Length: 483
Image 1 (cartoon, rainbow, N blue to C red):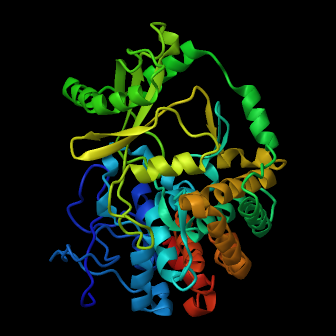
Image 2: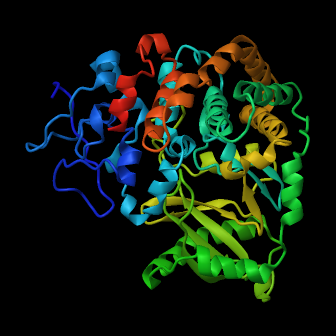
Image 3: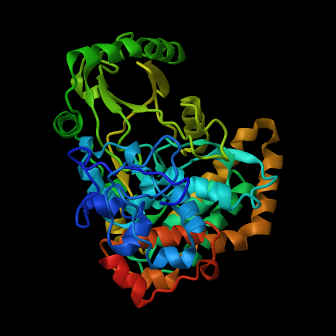
């Protein structure tokens, strides 16, 4: 084992394994095969494999380091360590036993894993593109801009889910959405991802030049709107039976107590509301999402404007996660709810209602109301959006182009000018960084190799060129990766 390297344990769904036995076929191994890339290429993911540096861990006496495979030899130990450290999620950071289905969702496609590793991906951009972001002003970041964040609701359309919003360089949003286009579109639509990324940047540029510009409503959005239901009885039945999971009475009491300052603030802001508007009728735990799937979430049903149960309001309480690990954003280690509240107010076409936050035990939760109808863009349905995908990516560009500079208030015009100069000078680089490796994309197999494929794609986005890696899709790599 090389000096200075350490060990991360890979927890099984049932709990920690006793030793470093091989688990090549499990869903968890498929997910974490990316994390232990050296042993994947050497012949499968070993539980207890050495995959990165962690100063707080030490090597167990009974374990042995994985064999050096073809990829290790070609890339080199130091480069491999840097890649795995930047582009992997430490397995011990998560307890998947509370959400076993999440593993299948993450491993279902490269884009699923891409969604889950937002912090690692963002930090790779921070480090690899440090020179590109020198002197660039900071903006309101969405923080997790990808194509499946585009949604249609009763309020309107656009990017939603502002959990990872922060203040940072615009290229984090631009490149994340660009890579998302490449990973999502290629398997589902016969379209050129580079052309779609250009269309996205076209919308971004248009909004920087004129913040009043409005994008065309995509045809898919109009189709979704016509399918919306206004059956509130059915809506509340769905929430009660499918979405809201029971919590112990003690926890429910804690939540109600924590809500008191929030309710006071809402009454002050919305003086027209009935005094009993925020009386809690029912509450429970919520489990959904991919990037936020392991964050704690609750649903609270409140009385609303009258005693009629059909005009009740649903509030979602979402844990504010730390973004520690992303070095080029401000306040990454702090669980500050205002980074989310401000970003959704500045970036969303139509911000949520009743937005605020609470302190619950040692955590902070941001709050917003639900709408009756909400439909996210799904990759499985992307094939039905051939008439809309150009307008959708342009729409997202406009939304970010309008929202990014609002951080500057009275100096917004100058910030827009600075962003336009950045785009003029670096658009070709952004295009290059967002392109995947076509040969790998075509030839690496489905299933277990998806993780390896994604890692190599992200490596390319992170400024490492194919010639630097000296990687070819030859027999050695394919055979070793599939053992």
